[in-house]
Length: 103
Image (cartoon, rainbow, N blue to C red; front, side):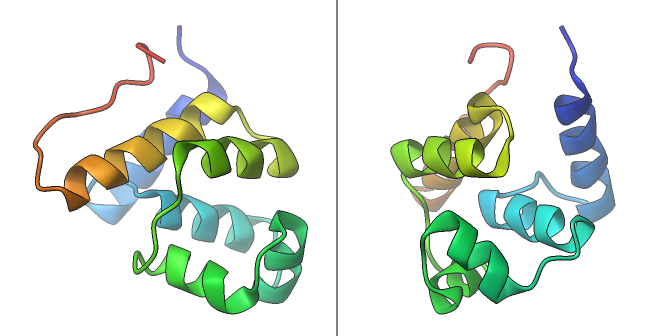
């Protein structure tokens, strides 16, 4: 079953030329909603410096925290958790791919 969110993720992947990361997704949401980094960080309960590090891929988010961010932003947690897990696999150098359908 496809959802608007998974279609959006596919669009983001094509736009970036590579699979979207958790940070790419937060940045895209923030830009689309025209929210400052400070306001988005406040909504997520983190500092703007930490949000910046997540958006740039310098910091990673646990699946639990990804689910909490999804809830705070009103997005399906399975997308955020999948992206978090994919980032961790990529960081570890593992070539596995997380599937939204399996979530």
